[in-house]
Image (tube, rainbow over all chains, first blue to last red; front, side, top):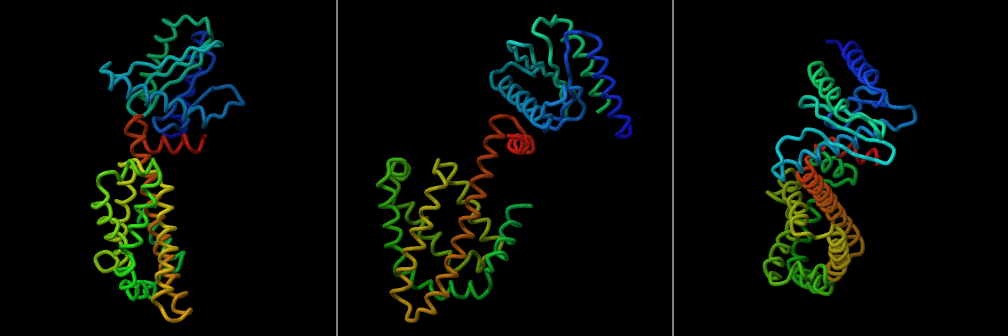
Length: 124
Length: 180
């Protein structure tokens, strides 16, 4: 798949994900090295910084899960006063990140993210 | 760029030449004579500070032997020169310092002790101010090159340890640093 069509396909997945649930405010595909690949994050966010942070969180989570014999990492969930940050792995090289509202119905969000992450892994 | 490439680039940058290598060989005898006193002074100084005294406690004699070997190689090179074997030798010094938990500022401190003590030793043994200036310059160049390699190795070893602990790739850590 050419780079542009790959990028288009990833953006389509992210937009579909946001459209599927009003609880998902923004989402992004990030490489395991912390580089932003595709995103519909709000303007004004420092995407390089956010991507590096997300990748660092996921790496630390994987390491901690392994160290504490919890098996392969499924997700990282950060609950803040104004909403949640959720990270899931997507293949060996990437991850899907979403920002949700504080009152998000998490079961649905997790399900939508899992499906989207599988699609992203196939494209990447 | 690998660290060895950095080393060769810095050798060129500071103008370290075959003439410097010859100068260093020509003053080896000065440090055979005065080196042990410099080494003793260095370890006496380390013993004055709790942070470093703890690290050397009970093994001063073996550390002095290692230090004397390191200092001797300043004047002979490693495997007869100041190339990759020399670089690899100095690279290990940085990694060892991380392993024992010695902060790099102490390594910088020892360079000052060698530099100032070395100058005093050379001033005692060399007859002309011109020769002193020329040979001291060569000594300063090799000490600064050593310090650069040790510091780079130290930084590299710390990154490796952080990468191992966090599971983060080196590239991700570099991204975090540049985004910080």
